[in-house]
Image 1 (tube, rainbow, N blue to C red):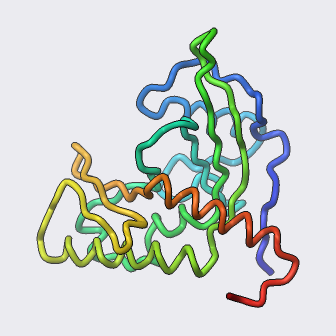
Image 2: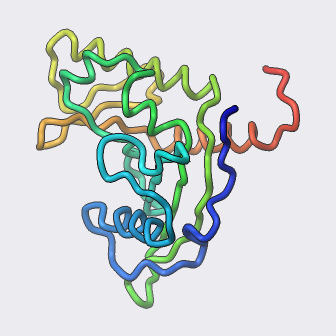
Length: 193
């Protein structure tokens, strides 16, 4: 039997204050440690954040227009790893997505959305796998480009100064993924398309 988490009690709530300005992922780390302090077992190594719950935590400025970072891998590891065996695959199955906005009066941030998303839908996973496979193919040819666009622009690889590629999802695609996940959750019965 598979456990499907639908809510994290007392983890993070809309309206929670984040006492800092955003800089180099500090808010994401702050949120992760806030969740850990509330008793959740946080993984700081390779893989998803809340392994026991099969859940990745993602934090984002609500009005950001940059791609959504899923995770990072070395080019050689990407070439050698099939989609379903990658830590990227694991990170884009179930996510706690936390959006925050800057409080203009104080300069700190406030949580405006904290929702769980199940991205295991075939519609989502097939598109992400196609993007992964396309990017792997480009890397397999030996091309270490700054950006490698996936099929249908669902996701792309972006080279980082440390030599790792970040697997990123376009903002419009993430909205589509969230909509698909919400629609799937809302159905009592699913008879396919």
